[in-house]
Image (cartoon, rainbow, N blue to C red; front, side, top):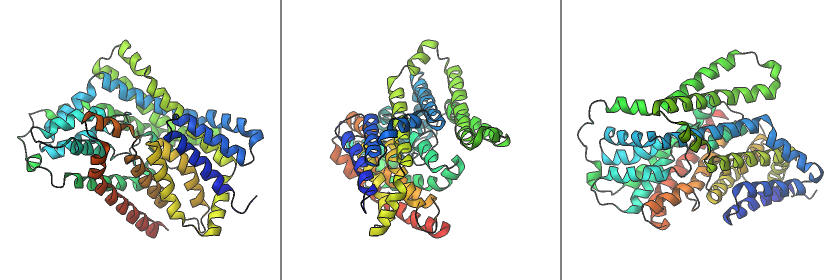
Length: 433
């Protein structure tokens, strides 16, 4: 092979995915095209069909797709039953200051990963502002920014689940070093309110008696997931799963608890809202749910092909030879992928296999969490400024504002978040090695 081959080939396949996505080719098809080009140019033409089939049907892939479908069905069921609307109405009364409610409502809805969920919280943000005259760009910026403060670590997000899978980290271990990124983003978002009308910061009368209790009841579907997840995790860890083999044990430990949590929560949500069979069928029949499932499947195919052709070790050697800072690659690849795809699953699936391979090949075997945090932070920032991010599109459309003013509103917050993420990376690397 040429002295520099695996790197340009892999980056070329990566760029092909991004270009096709930018040209409005369905992202799943774009990712499969990237996997095909990568396999062909890395000399795996003869076994490429087998590699892609294996990547699609291996247990980890099927388990991951099942989880994605269940969590999106749950979100859709809550929406159809009116439960989500009740949640945000009660939250608006509970958070007495308009500015707090404006940030809290999209954040609350953000706990459930609904595609285009910013459209659901948008009218609530407008209502929370009350009679205060503010621009549509300001409202859209608040709605959009705070809708996504959980996406670095909240376990219901497909990107988080995929990142945990690719990094082979448990939920607890992943959250421990990812949660600060969400805190940074929430704090940086306060810059959006800079110079806003003083009435937005006025305190309203206390909420009616029982508001908190009713809010807790309406959010019980989320609490059920976490409770069942914790109990199932403890039960699985107590079992002897050696007969399943290393791969089977890993899949069961990682996916069974969350699958049970989602299934029980769905049953609880149906009972809580007295959802009929027709409504539940509508939730399961939502085509967008299965489109996302297909997208996750293709991401896992790409990742399996990348692993099988041993591209990442070769890339690491080639980059080391030209002394390109790995930190720059770790930040830049997810950022560009996020910006072009507008999806966490997109930037995690296309860039993390490369990032993880580069880090694994570094001398001295440095700790992985600092690099994962840096990659996820910049990937998330990339998707936040993506003009094709669905939440960005629908939020701007609802508030009847063009893109440019919203970009200006969130730019300061994005820069501060990036600076804090780099500082966090430096501290983590210093502490963890």
